[in-house]
Amino acid sequence: MAALRPAFAAAGLELAEIDWRAPLEAFDGLALVLLGTAWDYQDHPKEFLARLEALQARGIAVCNPPEIVRWNADKGYLREMDEAGATTVPTAYFMDADASDVGAAMDMFDTPSVVVKRRIGAGGLGQYRFSADAMPDPDWRMGHRCMIQPFLSSVTEEGEYTFLFIDGAFSHGVLKRAAEGEYRIQSLYGGYETDYTPSAEDLATAQAVVEVLPFPAPLYCRIDMARLPSGELALMEAEMIEPYFYPEQGPGLGKQLASAVRKRLG
Ligand SMILES: Nc1ncnc2c1ncn2[C@@H]1O[C@H](COP(=O)(O)OP(=O)(O)O)[C@@H](O)[C@H]1O
Ligand SMILES: [Mg+2]
Image (cartoon, rainbow, N blue to C red; front, side):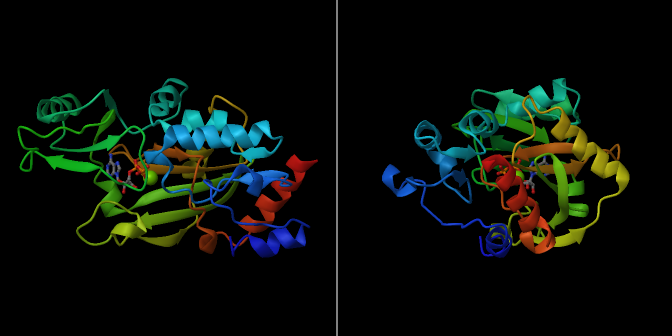
């Protein structure tokens, strides 16, 4: 918010921070709600969506709108994106997963190491990594609708690539690295960011993801990608709900976002 505020002020826009659980009246008079770091929505998805719909019903533009949030909250969208032609991280889907599912996924992906994650999840929380020599206990259960992916060693070796798009136009890239001995790049686990200027090829791969979204490009989206053994970048996550924007790596972000918001306000 601090990074965005000067550019918004220059565009004649004022930013106020309001908790998403605040009484609806707290939002009265706002032209637009920009979803920020609502980093607990994954444990209250219905409540969160109901709140966004209530704001929209009060005539407030919600960015991104509840339809997109609903679509984006469940990582099952990866399958749809794959079918639409985007390169995605190979993924198998489960209503719940147990030790035998983990073994079966290793066989299916022909890999000794997998990641199990919630379909509705964020921040790497409640995520598991298993390997042939570190299998789940026989009585282990994920306890959530989930997905299993081959573990991509590029994430620890080179990092995870992030591309920020505002109204479909590229803003900036970030390379996110995991701490020594970790594979999750989130700062919670000691992850850190480095500047990254994508090659034309990598940028085109990310841009192609935005272009096959099943709706016009949203006000903002963050395309997170990891490199497959083939060398191609694959979609890990298309984040349109509560992304951290990495403003430190994108000095032009505030201006680009403010002008996109202005355009939406007409
Ligand atoms: N298939 C994978 N291979 C290697 N690392 C992974 C894989 N899936 C997730 N990770 C690591 O876990 C982190 C969190 O997973 P992600 O799918 O981005 O979910 P979320 O950020 O919504 O919790 C990623 O940023 C990455 O560091
Ligand atoms: Mg992520």
